[in-house]
Image (tube, rainbow, N blue to C red; front, side, top):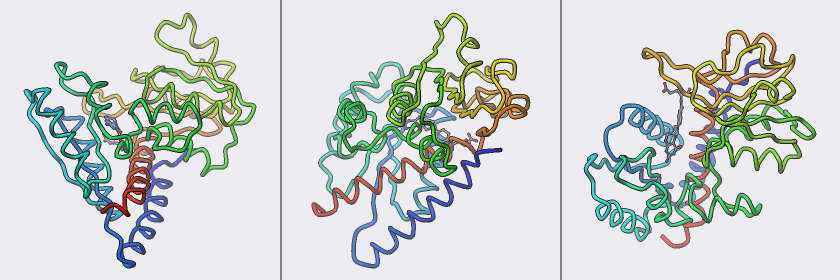
Length: 282
Ligand SMILES: Nc1nc(=O)c2c([nH]1)NC[C@@H]1CN(c3ccc(C(=O)N[C@@H](CCC(=O)O)C(=O)O)cc3)C=[N+]21
């Protein structure tokens, strides 16, 4: 069965829109996020545009600030500080990757925690790891929302996460542990990934290698979550050999229309959340 991320995300976005609409009628301000895009990476532009479109549909205002590839550290720093201090701005999203001369960690952590709709700052990441309510990273949160919507209970499952990034692999592993899965994290130096995946009830692929998870690497009835977005000759592929793995899987996400739209939905839900915390200060 295909886990229809697009449909679920659309449903959740519709509910969010109704909630925001009602609050606007009651006199509250629209939530507002600012997206900072440095340089003109074509993939980043596509993602940013889809975030702006999705925001408009749920009545969240967005402002896009495009900076040149040559933006200095000083310029980016003062922009983030200005947005931190602007009470009309609820959320700030610094689109990654940044050009090489700009240190991503440094700038992400300049964003005020309460405006960090990505959940990427040290404090918000730390709050996830200490089970304190916060904005959590959108892709792992979106995956959990998708599993919840399909009532897939991960308790007691052998879960294998392939990929150990700060923004997907590590936080999804933590979220799955919290839901009582037994989690193994594999990565580029793992000797034999299929040793782990063959015994897995749930696999999260988040590495960025097109078609890496093959049918012979999984058991029957596995649940497969594909976070990969790999563009090959203009076509989009996940990290899973979908055609063959889908024959063995009980549930599987497609690419596109799987995790991607759920990520955007989680970002919108985070934006709404921070805006309502910020509201009394406007
Ligand atoms: N600060 C920051 N926050 C992010 O959340 C962030 C980021 N930087 N940098 C890049 C990644 C990537 N990302 C995606 C979001 C949606 C889709 C998405 O909706 N994809 C569509 C397909 C879109 C297409 O055709 O390319 C789908 O899967 O159906 C994909 C990728 C968010 N990211």
